[in-house]
View 1: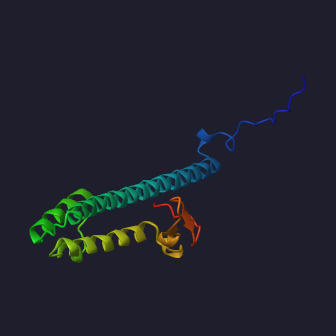
View 2: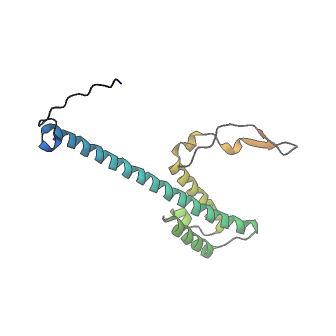
View 3: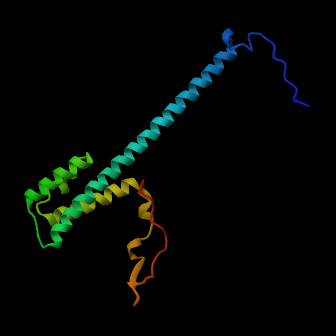
Length: 163
């Protein structure tokens, strides 16, 4: 059976890493630099995951607050400042972030609903900056036919993925 010829490796300071040669030190330097780059890349990856998790947690807390307000409004109940303060405190606790001033200063549930929608929009813009480049996907389906099927009348691009 034929095999590839093996290169002869002479023993000496250039080929022995334990000898402390200049070549071994250069190899160690390259390995240390590669290891630093790997650690930096892993740290950046973990930071991106943490930021994404914080944004998603914030969005879920805002959504729950909006749902609570919409439940009240669907029963024709408008709540005042005390309800708004307690809901804002709950949202702030859930999302781990300080709400913007319009949310904190809302006097009625209607004002709070509006402020939460604006905050939600800002968080979504932070998560997916390119989402503003897409057409308004809400206008995509404008009419419902006789059989309950939607007619597409607008853009057909897909919504961007939330990071």
